Length: 490
Image (cartoon, rainbow, N blue to C red):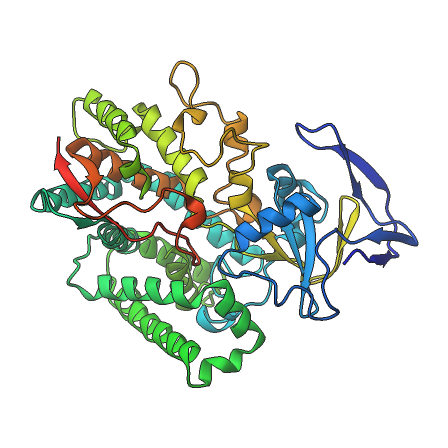
C-alpha cells in the first residue's frame, strides 16, 4: 500500500500548518514528473488486501486501532479497491472544504442503495455533488433549520406529541417499559409530521409505511450487505436473505409513494415545500422539471437515548432547568436551557450514532491531498466515532460529561471553542447531514418534557446494559442494547 503514483500535471507545492499541532503538512499541487506516495496503511496479500480482516460490524473500532499505528490519514485495499480513512477534524475540513480538490472529494461512490433502492441516486445523500443536489440540499436545510422555527406549527405539534407521550407513560407508572421501542415509535410519528405537516396515527398507513421502510433500510444498509450487493447486485434476485430484504424494502417504497406522494394533500410540511420547488423548476424550464416525484421520494427515504437512565443527577439538572421556565417547555424555552443543550451535544459526541460517515469518493479522477496521491475512485471514510473518542481532543472521552460544553459560568461554550470544532457528528462541508439542528431541537424538546415529569430508573429485575458506546448494537446507526426502565412521577 505504500507505493507511488506518477503525476504529470503542472502546479506548485504549498505548505500549511495543522491547527493546534506543531507539524507542517504539505498540500502538494502536482508538478511535472513528481513521484508522490500513497498514504500509509495496513498491507495484505495482492488483490485481496484486507478483505478477510475487516470487522464490518465494528469498522469504527477497527479504524481507531489502525489510526494508532498509521496516523490520522491511512489507506487500505479490499479486492483491489482503495479505501481512505480520516481520523482528525482538521483534516476533514481541509479535504472536504478548503483544499483545491474539495469538490472532487465530495462526490459519492457507486452504491447499491443509490442505484437500486433510491432509483439512480435521485436524492441528496447518494447523489453526486452537482448543481441539482446542492439546490435540493440547500432548500431542505433552509426549511429544516430556519423556516420550521418561523412556522410555529411544527414545534408546537412536537410539544404536543411529547405531552401525549407523558400521558401514556403515566398509565405505565411502576411498570417496566421498553424505552427504545417507545422512542422508536415517537421518532416515526415526528418524521410523519415533518413530511406531511400533519400528525399521524400509529394505526394509520403512514406510520406503518415509514416504520417499515426505516427498519428494512437499516437491515439492508449495513456495511456488509451493501458491500456484497454493490459488488454483486444480482444477489438481490437470488433466493436468500438479501433477496428477502430487497423485496421488503421495495414493498415499503411502494407504500411510501402511495402514502406520502399520491395521497398527501397538505399545504405544509417538507413534501409541500418540495412540491412548490418542483412547480418553480417546471415553470423556469417551460414544462420540464428535473425535480420529479422520484427525487421527492428519495428525500423521504434519506430522512428516514439510553444515557439518561445511567445518570440520574443529569436528569435532576435538566428537570430544574425546565422548572425554571415556569411554563411548558417550548422551542423558545430551550434556548434558555444551556445545561440541557450541553447534554444533547454530549450525547451526540458520546454515542455518535452514525460512527462512520457516508462514504465520499473521487470518481472523476485521481487527486492530490497534502503529500499524498489519492487514486481515482478511492472511497473515503470519516471515522466520526474515533474523532469523538480521541484523548487528543477530549479529556476522559469514554465518560458522558456535559460540562465539557459549558463555560465556568454555566453557559454554552462559543462556536470556536475546541469542544465545538471537534464535534463533527453530522460531518463537514457540502455533504454535512441535512437537519442536524432540527434533530437537536426535537431531541431537546422531547427529553426536557419527559424528564420534567418523570424520573427514569432501572427496571425491576431488569439490569441496565453498560453505558459504553463501544458495546452498542451495530448497524447503519448504532443503538443501545434493548433495556427496560421505570418512569416514576416527580
